[in-house]
Image (cartoon, rainbow, N blue to C red; front, side):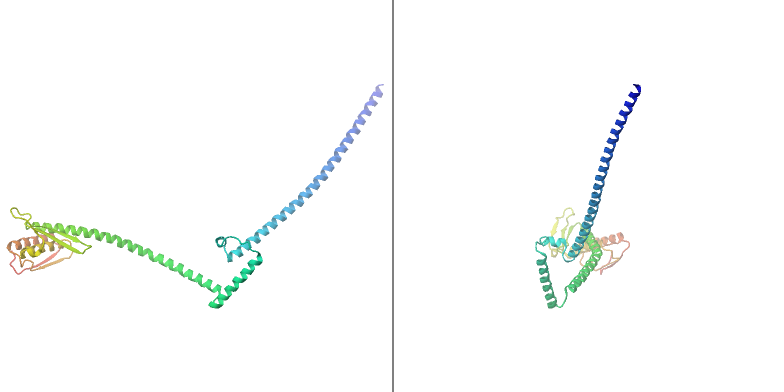
Length: 288
């Protein structure tokens, strides 16, 4: 009985082993089928990859050809000029070719009529543009020193105007001081734009007990008063001059003794205040 049980177990194990072998064979067959399918898919992918590379190469070649065509077209008409002309044309190639031929015939007729070619005109135009650029560069270089000179002139003009105003003020002040030495007052008004000089004199304006007299006409002055006013004015102008020599001839010929004495005193004081100058005074009268 024990033996039979063991034999039954062996038969059961053997049957189970056959069943598993059949299952493994089935799985193996299924795997081989899947491998064959994967190989087919791999082959298809290789074909697709080759086709993709070929298409990319074709696209790159087409792009290069388009770039070359655009470069050639730009030699005749730039994109900016094309946009200004209204953009791309809707005409056919044949229509555009006919238009080009017509324009070329027009160019040929113009060249024959004018005795020159379009290429020569373009070369002359380029040469003229170069000359214009050189001229502009030369003008720019010439402007630099000119602008410096102009700025210098403007600065000197402003300085001249300021100095002229200061000189007129100083002459007026010196004239007033010189006139006060004789008891008079006076004013010098200088108008540089009108190129005029106005002298106003008030006689005896600082002398107590005497009535001041405003003079509007030098003819109303006596000879001595006129000579003294002239001397006062000359001394006021002389204070603004840099000449190392000063000479006065017969300045007191119409003066009385008092005016002569005051005038000589003023001249001596002016000479003492300017020790670097030389003075020559000529008078027919006897100097005090």
